Image (cartoon, rainbow, N blue to C red; front, side, top):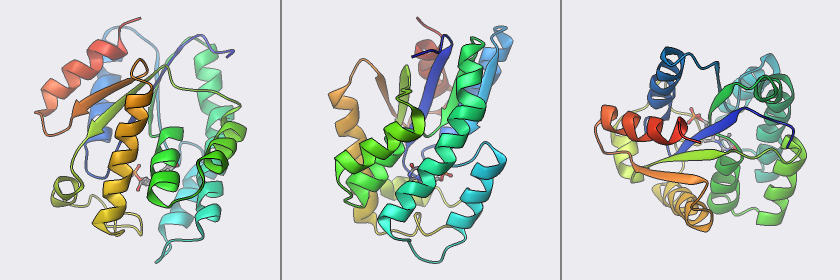
Length: 204
Ligand code: TMP
C-alpha cells in the first residue's frame, strides 16, 4: 500500500444512517484540524455519478455480472481520482460504502461466486483496503420502516430475504476480520453512534 493517510469506510443496509454519520464524523475531523475527504459509492466522480444515475434509473435488476462491473467501474475511477491521491497527501478518507458492499450485495445477496467478486474488486482497487470499517447494523425491516430518502431504486425494492442475506454477509465479514471492523447497533441514538464511531476513527 502506497497510502499514508487513514482510510475509513462506512457500511450497512438501507436506512442504517451511514450518510448522517459520515457527515458528523467529517465535521469532527475538521474541528480537530484533520484534512478529511468524503466520498460515496457508487459515485464521487463525474463518471461514477453518471454510472450511479444510469444504474438506479433501471426498473429491474441488471445481470448480476453487469451490476458487479458497473459498481467496480465507478470504484476504479474513484480510487484513482480521489481516494489514492487523498491518502498519499495524508488525509483521512471517509467513504460511504466500498468493496465490502460488493461482497455483501453481489456475493451474499445475489449469489455471484466470491472469487469473482473478490477478483473484480481487487482489479478496481489495486488491492487498496480500508484501515477501518464501521458497520451500521440494522434489521432490514427497521431500515425499510425508516422510509426511503429520495425514492426507492431496484435494490431497495429487493425482497426482505435479499436484505437479510446482505446483513448476514456483513456480519460474517466483520466476524472474519474483527480487527478491521467496528460493528455498531444502528438502533442506538445518533449522537452515541457518532461518539463510538469517532473514537475508533480518530485512534491509531
Ligand atoms: P446508497 O449508498 O444510497 O445506500 O445506495 C447504494 C446502493 O447500491 C445500495 O443499495 C447498495 C448498492 N451497492 C451494491 O449493491 N454494491 C456495491 O458495490 C455498492 C458500492 C453499492
